[in-house]
Amino acid sequence: MVKLRLKRCGKKQRAVYRIVAIDVRSRRGGRDLRKVGFYDPIKNQTYFNIPVILYFLEQGAQPTGTVQNISKKAGIFIELCPNQQTKFN
Image 1: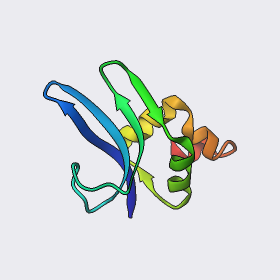
Image 2 (image 1 turned 90 degrees about the vertical axis):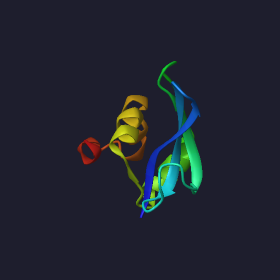
Image 3 (image 1 turned 135 degrees about the vertical axis):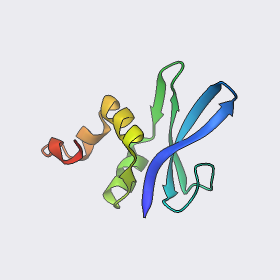
Image 4 (image 1 turned 180 degrees about the vertical axis):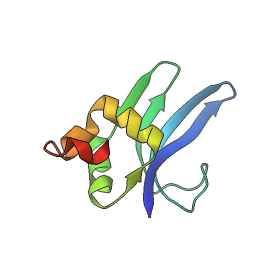
């Protein structure tokens, strides 16, 4: 099973995260299938490769709770299913 989750990068006390599609059995720093976004909590910046994220979600990938919250703020789940907004709540 594939999940969309955060992968920690950056220095000590200065964490930035990549949003990656990764196998469930891999550890946090393990090899990812594809990088699909970027999140900087200090500067509050996000970048999403929306077509790739939508592709993985349509193939059955499950986002983790944190990635789901970040994506909701950006409105990615609304693009996936505009009529079924309660599906990911």
